[in-house]
Amino acid sequence: MSDQPHRSRKPGKPYRRPQKDPVRLLAFEALRAVDERDAYANLVLPPLLRKAREKEGPDKFDGRDAALATELVYGTLRRQGTYDAVISACVDRPLREVDPPVLDVLSLGVHQLLGTRIPTHAAVSATVDLARVVLGDGRAKFVNAVLRKVAAHDLDEWIERVAPPYEDDPEDHLAVVHSHPRWVVSALWDSLGGGRAGIEDLLAADNERPEVTLVARPGRATTEELLREEAAVAGRWSPYAVRLSEGGEPGAVDAVREGRAGVQDEGSQLVALALAAAPVDGSDALWLDGCAGPGGKAALLAALAAERGAALLASEKQPHRAGLVAKALAGNPGAYQVIAADGTRPPWRPGSFDRVLMDVPCTGLGALRRRPEARWRRRPEDLDGFGPLQRGLLRTALDSVRVGGVVGYATCSPHLAETRAVVSDVLKQYPETELIDARPLLPGVPALGDGPDVQLWPHLHGTDAMYLALIKKTG
Image 1 (tube, rainbow, N blue to C red):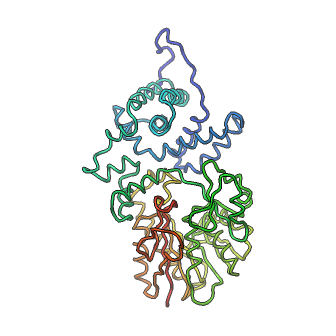
Image 2: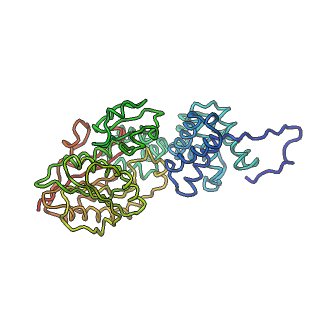
Image 3: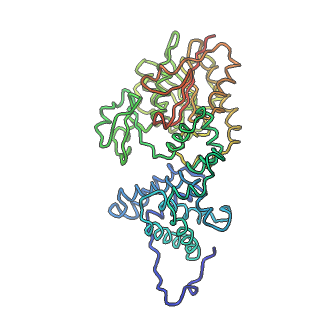
């Protein structure tokens, strides 16, 4: 796939200078950052879009351009598994032998052909032009040949060709059709408890673009204020949630810019609200968020605590993330403190707190809608690394709460090894505890299962797949 010299072109064939399409070039740059630097698209894309606006000018890089670039990046990442299977059927070598930049260009082209309404000729032409700009003429010819093979069939026809029949291998079929690694399909299926319809709905929901959800921080903003924004509608479950429909820009909202409101998934809000609503015996003056970064739950908890005259200690191990927490809490109407501390070696005394939230580090399999690249980055062995940390942090939480107080153990992963297995293992060491039924503390939220813990789902609740167990210390 080496570049071909100029003299190799056929005599008499006119040379057309490749068009530098800023939208597709930006999308390619974002995919390379995700691939080369293990970057997250949601962190890489905004500065690239700002840079493009500055370079091209607002008239040349308008809202439609930004929307197309975003769709190309996220759509390609979400459907990467499916597209890899299609590309594999169209090349004469293993995918691992295709240079990663070439594969990124091919994937962008395949997404335009199979995942958007862009006309076939435009999708192929624009992608080949991109290949000539970033890869050179020789590899552009390879891209052109592959994309013309892909264009011979639509997505449904390709899935028929490249996915094994469900009856022969259900997990591999679902992995190809819904673009998830096989081990993730298996883990999510176990967490759901079986049945084809549920797992298909969940995997499909993971591939949908999530809405932007705002939180009106109590005492600082109201949902009524946020609902006056264009494209704003009320949240489904949290009384503090407001959703922005497609095209809504949180950075344009005054309350968000001023820190009185924030961007926070409704599942995350429900975790904080349930902990705040759980019954405690005796005083209710001091709360702890033991894994507070980047600060969304801490800001909501601090505001709820302030309404009751309680104070929040927000602890985060990483100093830069502790800085984000401090920024999120700035202006909170009540007392709070932010510290950088290791939650497994806490600087506070045991039994100091009335309420403790421990939203532990995890694989993030519950947020694949927002971070689609995480599904390809995570490995089953990652669970071995998170497990001891999660257990250690839950033990810290139980040691930190006083008798009669409540601990909330939360993860943004539905994997049983990170949820019920952790809680079950740790509580064996703490016989003087009891699980509280969390379901009544999420009023109006349906399909919460048998309890006492709660697992939220994208396909059932429109939230990230947050898990919550509430534990009361009885002795």
